[in-house]
Image 1 (tube, one colour):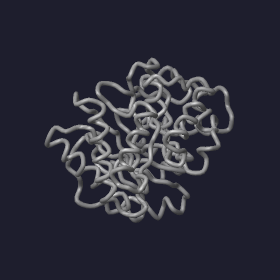
Image 2 (cartoon, helix red, strand yellow):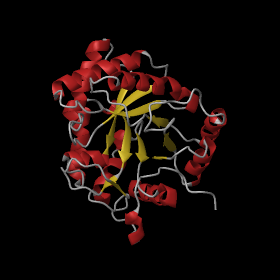
Image 3 (cartoon, one colour):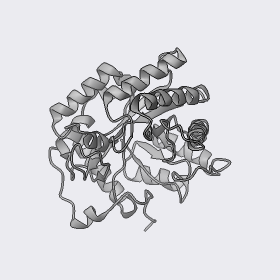
Image 4 (cartoon, one colour):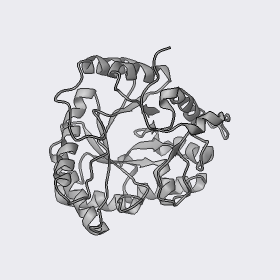
Length: 309
């Protein structure tokens, strides 16, 4: 059970905060997620951070790649920057102790879904050929807004098959992330526990449960099928505790899947609140404590840890 924490105030501060709130996994940005420019080297406290997380039993560590990366596009210079940027994230991951690099799949920008899927597979295959050992590329499902690809399990399976065909090795270290808020926005009725389990069944059938290495565990402020992606505190949105709990308690995910929270109000201490709520759901809670009205004025605008008191 992990959470996305910012590292703008230092890797060690994020590591200590993760342990303080009871996280056993962690997701970070390796650099500014809204810029192409990357720092030339990992921060000076990276080695200490890796050792600290190992002692604390916090694993895996996932790097969330830049939001600018679009694996489905063809327009230059963005297409080349996207491929180069993803390769950089994969190659830099070991410097942060990360074994997973998660990226949004992207938009075909009017080029059509078939062409976009082909382009994604080409970029994934190229990036994997440059990835260091023991680093896995993780592609995240979308809510389906605009021309975004990857909002259905069927499209994720197509990406896997096309990448495997290009590489000739069953796609190697390629895995997937299911974001629950994105699933909801795409139209999956995961508020119902039976439907949530059926969705996991379908993923297992078409992709394979062994390739579901990340679940971004988020409730949603959006209407189901709206194609919008607006995250909410766990159990306080339109998905609710029953559906989210079904994901957490599905024993097929227990061996290898890490659950990462990307919930609002991290800078105001709601990282700890949502982590407690996740553990309650995992333990079988069917309802969660009510949150104050101020909690619903929070956003994910700044994913960073609160200052020390």
